[in-house]
Length: 502
Image (cartoon, rainbow, N blue to C red; front, side):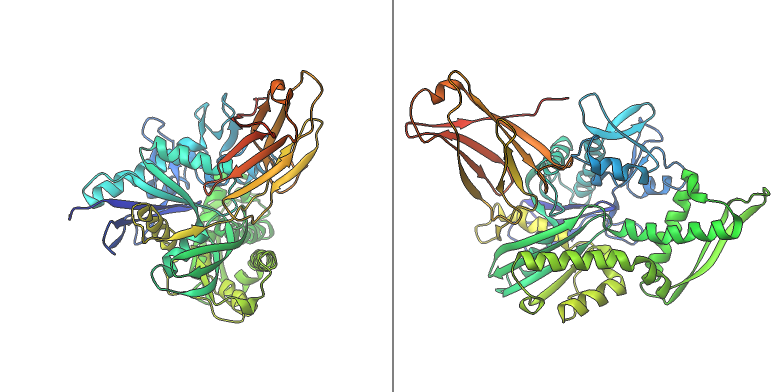
């Protein structure tokens, strides 16, 4: 192996993880993870033996026999709180039980203890680091990790925490659609507008970027946390469950192991119908009917059946694209290229609908499984390369403040260009009293989904002299907030204290 620094781009996906390595001073790019003829590693960890967790393909196999201790889909919950509406609405979709640990970190209940989802992420990333070292014959730790564009600051911090715990040096966290655009256009001297349509295993993102040489200017982004390949699988599974109810008067989804077998069969059928017009779904010995007689599930699904079952999901994606275009004040005709990302974007109906909407065929020559990891690797290398990509990103989830008395205001709106600065006037409090200002992130002032980012305290003595009191807030590219108290006499940085536990 030749000398020179290597950098990793890690697409830590909901269902699969992809990794690309780039060498300083070289155009050579290596896809690190290879298993079962795919360039990915399942983002799954099995704790059947808690002393020797399994990660990847072997862990995914355990889903069929031990779904209660096999943790998948955890990326949808990392960095969230148990009391949130999101967790309450979606936790039932998983066989394993989801709870907070004593430190109020969300995780899975396994063998009587809570395994935080950051620990699950650490195990996946540790496996990534080990496989990269084996492939490159050297220890490589410098990386950039991609996340969905709609991830909040707390979710991004959780990913960084997991990466550091896995021994990685995480130089940045980049939005997945932005990473894909970088991989598509780097060093091509383009002057185009690009829509990145990123439909992965668990999440959907749509981002619009303006590309000028190697400057990537994000204009708008939108997405949804529960809109991905898993949801397409679930739509097929719902049909299979209904067939079992009609034919055998049994609901197989009530048994976790049986439900997982159905879900795996649904995924296989969905994938087959991307290239075939019909496929057989056969699940032997699925259960027993009301008379105690064992039965198989055996039926034929056509591509038209799949498209009818999943059309509402596809239309949700199209709706998000339309909204993102409106946010950028653009029309479909203003977009030069549509880049398809994520395994679920291979579905013919998805490509057909985006072509109809955008009035041009999408670009499908790029590998949807590794393009995001490739772009993340390019960003990791750019930290050492002055000719690398320049990223001008936007805020995907708005940030607001709560003043004493409960008055709330958005400080930075969705699609605010980064970095950002805002100055907010502060009232003079009663004598001897200070002010505490809470920072939160969320799409709605009143939603239980909003996340408290921290609290800034202004002591009483700062108001003893001076006039024109204000709060200055700055937000950098990595979504780190800094605040300062400002008057006509002084400017004092205000540390953000973590929110109090309930």
